[in-house]
Length: 207
Image 1 (cartoon, rainbow, N blue to C red):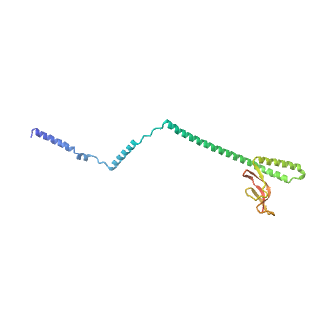
Image 2 (cartoon, rainbow, N blue to C red; image 1 turned 45 degrees about the vertical axis):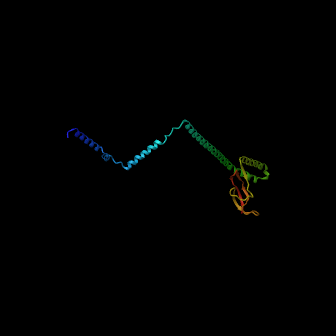
Image 3 (cartoon, rainbow, N blue to C red; image 1 turned 120 degrees about the vertical axis):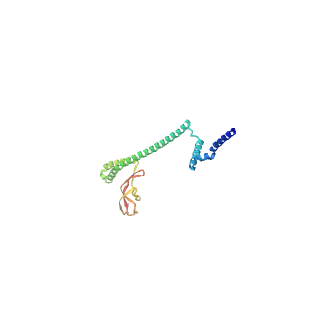
């Protein structure tokens, strides 16, 4: 029919065709398929973004906090420096004392043969030359006094039990009335400085 009713019907049919072309099924067919890996990655990104948004931003250090921190660092450095210096001072004192002791021991060891010769001269002195023996004895006494004032003492182990730490056995021989292992004669006296034996006494030991 060519009346107004027919015309309205054709319009309605064209509208119906437009609605059918916008059907959800057709749009769904056109949508891309989302893979499980892609969905999981998007979820992780969402969670990370939420964590970053929820975490508070680090606040800058205030001037007071900076001063307190630096004060602690400087104090620790000063304490370490003081401890190092104290250790150095003690070590230097020990080294100086040890060096002095070594030097003194060296001089004493050089003088010991002189003392031995003076004692031999006194032992073999002729009674008729008493004035000469008196001079030798005076020199000997002076030298022993100098060593004593410097912490060096002389020891004669005659009659003591033999001790390899302090004595050097030159020979052994039987001695009536003496048990074996005792010093029966001192050939050269020993010398020590404190607990250090500068020269062991050279002795004869009973067999």
